[in-house]
Image 1 (cartoon, rainbow, N blue to C red):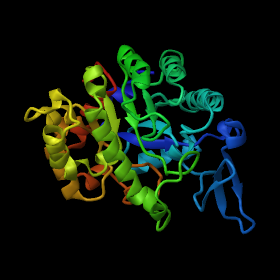
Image 2 (image 1 turned 90 degrees about the vertical axis):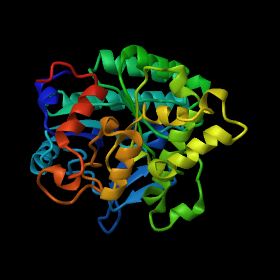
Image 3 (image 1 turned 180 degrees about the horizontal axis):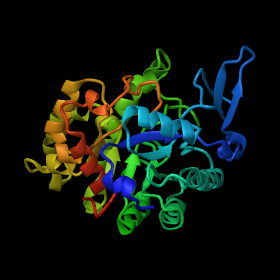
Length: 344
């Protein structure tokens, strides 16, 4: 799926989700399903307990590629790496349903983006509750469907550092592709989470940041980067509160009794943090400035949560929202992360 579009794009959006009509009902009793309330309000439902109301997917850039491409042009985005909708990670449902859904999802995404290789590429959905099946699906998606990597959630029955996931991480390393890690709201198909997060949309406003910060700490403390030295992992939304808490996390690595010996020397936690990648979808320029200082500008990629509630709302070149960072640099970073060669 390598194209001149990705090689030469001035602006590459790494944080963009897609919803696919062909996947409705592909997880069996868990859905997903689209519908309308009696008053016409659209909803998106998972299983029997989770219903997202008021978000229009049908006839929107989430589902219609023509509208996506038009909006990309309006926003000055040359190329987009699309990933699964976080509502449909399905990491807590039985493995057979998850495996079936991910295969159907990846096939449908491949069909949707195939006519537009100069503007779109895909990241695969994976059933990470079944690590061997996830590794095999990643290989199929990369080799047969032309995907550039995979995307999955921060939460599943397996912690991100669980040795059972090493088969998946090792396969990504062998295939030489990155993995994008993004939260989903708690309680869709798994544990309900803190009830306080159910008010004021705090599950996505602050809950996502907490999950992303925990993911960073787990990956480093749990030794994932040491077991897989060539693995590239990108965390959404600037890694949540990572930039603010980096000093405290590093001190924990040096001082707390559970910390492994290899993290105790000065600078070891920081060195591993700078191996991770982060998208720049944060809401304040000073946060972006701090993130750049902590992890290094060379490990940041541009992201918008395209067409989502918190997408940057001004039309035109996205650099307006990231004046502190050069878009050409962010695109060069994305090409490195995605293993793109031959850029002129």
